[in-house]
Amino acid sequence: MKKLLVIDDDENIVDIIKAYFEDNDYQVLTACDAKEGERRLAQKPDIILLDIMMPGMNGIEFCRIVRDSLLCPIVFLSAKTDETNKLLGLTSGGDDYITKPFSVVELHARVEAHLRRESRPKDRNQRIFFDSLWMDYSRCECGVGDQRIDLTKKEYAIVELLTLNAGMVFSQDRVYESVWGYDAEGDARTAVTEHIKRIRKKLGVFGMESKVATVWGIGYKWEK
Image 1 (cartoon, rainbow, N blue to C red):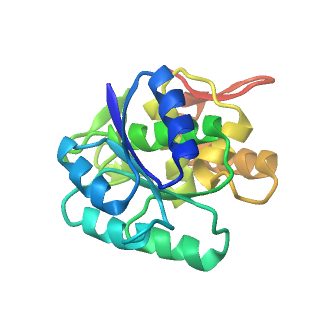
Image 2: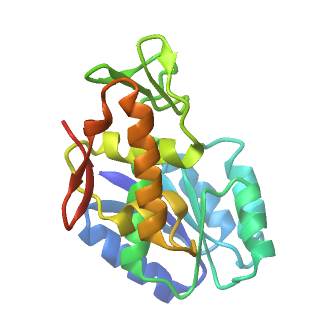
C-alpha cells in the first residue's frame, strides 16, 4: 500500500484528499503545518502533497529541508498561479505544481504518474530488454546492442511511457498530458503524431518501427 503525506492547513482540502485516496487503497498521513509534517517524515511517505502558504514555515522552506533527507516526489498544492511561485516550488526540489482549486481525479493521475516513475529500475547498470531493444530507465537511454538510439527528451519520454506500460493503449491526449504536461498549450494530435513518426524512423534503422503500434481510432501502444 502506497503511503501519501498531505501537509496543508486547509482542513477541507485535507479531508477531501484523505477520503479519495483512502478509497483508492492509499495509506494517507496528514499534517496541518511544517512542524507536524516534519514529524510525519519518520514514517517514510512514498509521495508528499505540500501546501505553500502555511503558518510558520512555508512549503518552499519545508521542501528544501525534506530534500536533505528524503528523495520521494513532492507535489506542491497552491492557490498562487503566478510563474514566479511555480518556479520557486520546482527549483526548491518540488516535482510538480498544482494550482487550487483542482480536480482530485487529476491529482490522483499525477500522483500515480510520479509513483510509476519512482518504481523504475534504480540500478544504473540494469537494462530492461524488449526483444533486441534495451531501456536503461535510470540513465534515460535506450539502444540496440552497443549502439545507443539518439532520441530527443520528448521522444525518449514517449518510448519510456509506452515500454513501462507495454501492451496498454494510450490516446494522443494521454500521451500529450504525460509528456508535455497538463498545462501545455498546443495541438496534441499534431505534436504526438510527429514525435511518433520520428521515433518510428529511428527505430526503423534497427527494423523495430512496428514496436510502436497504432490502435486505430484509439491511440498507440508498445507491441509486446
